[in-house]
Length: 307
Picture 1: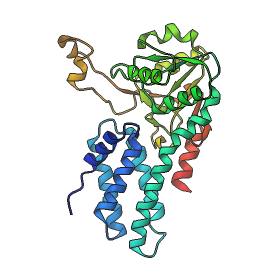
Picture 2 (picture 1 turned 135 degrees about the vertical axis):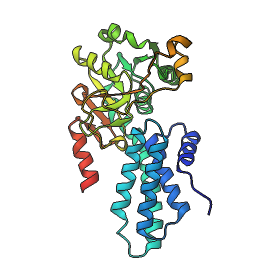
Picture 3 (picture 1 turned 90 degrees about the vertical axis):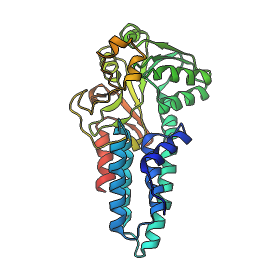
Picture 4 (picture 1 turned 135 degrees about the horizontal axis):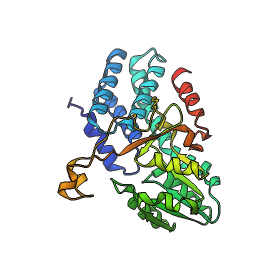
């Protein structure tokens, strides 16, 4: 039997499907691992799943999002491993149910888009931060419902993901313009509402997302603008940050840094890519489970882990 490389499998899933999120790719990789390794006992299965999860988290930078998927899959295995008397049936059913779990998770983005479209009205000016598949799906759904609106997208340095978002919006004939990150305070008075995605949703209902989300949340609250988060429930993660910088620092490599400044300045620049926006700045979470208040996230996590 050939050796299985969880990192290579994970990266292959992401490369083959650009619309796949990190948690789903992690779950797909773990299902593929069980299918290939064919563990012979429940103890071997649990050890394989745990060791591969640890390897994946260690080898992928900014692993907050994939951690949610890994933890969900481990909980799924623990809940189902003792339901069968025959080990062969147990293993095959875990793989089949794992694939079904992945399929349902993939459908969650379309579901949240249908639930969230009611928050967009005619003539709205919407501010979007960075690139988010969930927000894009939601805005596409609004466009399909013949709602007229326009979008301002932040440039989203240091990654420049805002340009990717604006390009995707224009591909669906949604009016969009890119603004520099430092102009958010300047344009906030002309904005009706803000939509952002999330790499992870913490137990408190706060979000881990592209750097700059926190300051947009602050500006939204000061100016009484609704701040909505569109995120699938498989991004709910068992974390409880206590401050916007209470996260593992994610630093860009030298090549990325040199793209936004000259060689001398690059040596002085530290570029963080994620921050934490506390729950008090979040108006509502638009998820496949429904529209939730931030405080409801902990209840949903309790259902997953302790039911």
